Amino acid sequence: MCGIAGSVFRNKMGQAESDRVKRMAAILRHRGPDDEGLRQGENYALAHRRLSIIDLEGGHQPMSNEAGTVWIVFNGEIYNFPGLHDDLVARGHRFRSRCDTEVIVHLYEEYGPGCVSRLNGMFAFAIFDEEKQRLLLARDRAGIKPLYYSFDGAALSFASEAKALVMTAARPAAPDPRSVVDFFALSLVQEDRTAFAGIQELRPAHTLVWDLRSAPLRPERYWQLSYARKAGMEGPELAAKVSELLEDAVRIHLVSDVPVGTYLSGGLDSSLISAVASNYLPELNTFSAGFVGKEQLDERPFAREAARMIGSAHHEVEVSPDNFLDNLRRIIWHMDEPTLSPGVYPYYFLCGLVADSVKVVLGGQGSDELFGGYPRYRMALLENDMKLSFGRLRLLHLAADADQYRRRYGLGGLKNELLRLTAPADRRIYEIVSGFHPRRLPSLFSARFRQEVDGYDPLATFHRSLDECDSDNLIDRMLYNDFRNMLASILRTEDRMSMAHSIESRVPFLDYRLVELAASIPPRAKVRGDNPKMILKQVARGRVPDSIIDRRKQGFTAPIESWFTGSLAGGISELLLGDRASGRGIFDRSEVERLIGRAFGKKKDIWRVWSLVTFEMWCRVFVDGEGVQLHSESSH
Image 1 (cartoon, one colour):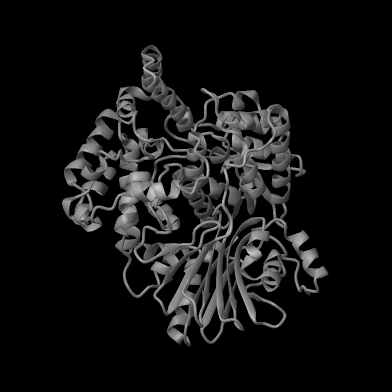
Image 2 (spheres, rainbow, N blue to C red):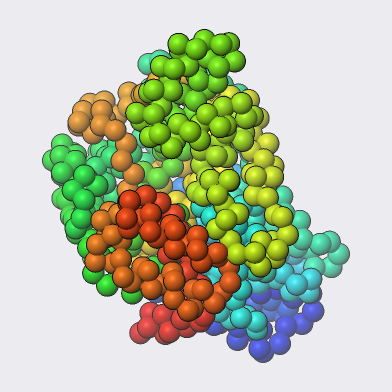
């Protein structure tokens, strides 16, 4: 895993622009402490920070073709590169290394920008073709590896992390108002925007081509996940196919010239990845985190049970609320954006534990979005039953479903569901995944800020994204939305927290062959009644303890309820109600006070308070400039 950065100009670049690229690379040092490189041409500069994983002696970047006319900086791993290498050799290409980076260079020579569709892996790269005066940016299908850019019409700058662009820009950082609304509406930023005004993210499964001599920027999708094409197999045959592809995905994800381990949270996904990996490694190191706080959130007993079954050398770290705000400040600096999940906090320490033993680690991320693991899928099915009963006037069935819904999601949840019972399916999906309920969202913001966003409606953007799905099935559309949107937040945490400790994190479930197979599985084989991830449980049976397979899903999070309402209460109140936060003029102070009161008094709205906390910390780090000091500390 690495960090990449660069700038390309229509005309000749000056020394100041070259120096900026060097500063961007320095900010990304944590992504690649093993090596650094710079290629400067007349109108471009490419910089690279390397974390050496494969071909430790070779693989220096930026790397070029034999003629020195095509240059690349690359972040990621290409798992099918041996086969691509052999095919390119047969076509007459000559190699100087055995690394996957050089394969991409020759693949580009052979196929141009279309080369990306032949890659199986996680990647973000930039290629500058001197002869064609063409810049190519590319990102993998699922968006495992990040890539950000800014463009002013005459120059394009890019980097693996937005902070490298923001902290070297001439103007101070400012939040993008629409992205602020998105974050609190959906806990994520939509389309290709970021939290920063003027900084865009290259979307997953996209390339961006800039032909300097003529054309404008051309973002193009090169892969689209289809839910309409359903597999022609079911039952044991389908489970066998999932098992076969998962085995192969884990096997190729283990290729490395440095030690490899796995996360082991105690849930189904990481336990299954660890079990498969143990078949290929003579000794497997596994890693989990626990908490000082609510015992029911601590999954270490299940992780230990799985470790005993697969025979791994197991390692644990215990996370407490000590120095919470200082630690969160550093986490947000690495994250670049405010974040949805409190799980980012223990994840930071878990990656630190991993770094003490191995340099590459495999995880189970992506499984829930592919195979239907989230409780909201079951919620949606129950809501659909209620909608059908209501439409057919089957009042007894409606009453039974409503009572079940109340027992599971509370009286407030039932009230919200009854209010949206007659709404279109996509609107219901929006409300299920929303952070602040659409009816409550406007009251969060100040009158001045509402005027600034000028009536921006995140629902309209959400609809445009969901319209890309080629299936009308409710669960298919929810899965597509989560793969397209929710997964982006999870992968950002995965990438940033591992890179904060200079380790490479890999996600076998997101091998695109397995992703395409999962999308083709009928929803009824994934989620039925109160039984999620049915097909994956069949695959795991006999490899993972039954106690893990049969338990309810528990997301990897932190006990922020007990932390925020305990020793951290005073610090949280000061953070959100102090002069700095109030002076930003974004939120309605009385609404923030109400949310804090509900969180500390009734232990409700804790997650919404978490969103406010991470946003304010993001403002302090990037808008107020505290990130400069954090960067200075990390450089030593």
